[in-house]
Length: 306
Image (spheres, one colour):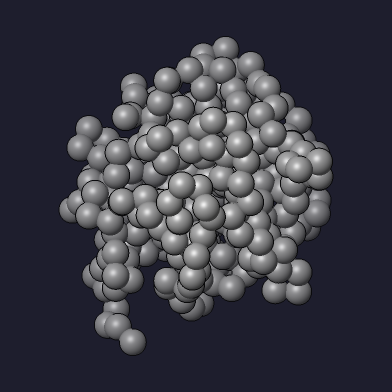
């Protein structure tokens, strides 16, 4: 349908230090996937105002803090399966979508954890995956669990800044990364098992969604789309998991660039950073590295930086 877009190369920003590899530690997450020995599985990158990059290690319940110089430390380690995360604009809280425990909050800098939400409407989540903030503090998150084509029961929620919870959509086959359009009138949701990006137009006054549709249909990859981010022009950056690729699509859905991993194929999630927000940082789980690529347009300012 479209010509192949120009390719942007990546380089390794930093790698998980060998002393933090967990190949000998048991993980139910790893055992269920019959993945052999995994040292880690990096996900969910997000920056604070000081330029520190936080990311998660799903199978071993760890959250890492990476300095601007690329040095690693364990910010938190607990009995969960953390995936997506975001820093609150007050700089004192880290919100985490945890597949096992629900929506969590960690104090910065102590790492003290509390459960924000684990039983919506008196029933358990299927398994949270990713989350994103609106400018007003509303928090959107996906509840993926094991939903797939044979069980399309994945959900998308909104936790209002006031504390009220809205179920926005149910029926996805693997809802994953999500991001709001520049004007915050549309919520884009990656649906991994259908290999596509869906658009959920948000009705005003918290009245739900209307006329949801398919925005971008991808092809290829043994997995599907994962994390997403937006830039200042409304272009959408989409991680194609298992494909070693991040696609940049225009706000109209036209492919602008392909960003190729210089490491493994397990690209998972991403975040814009750097002084001018024109550097895209990408988690790659196979080698346990953070990749980076230079882009011509700055990323949309994060909620943590507002």
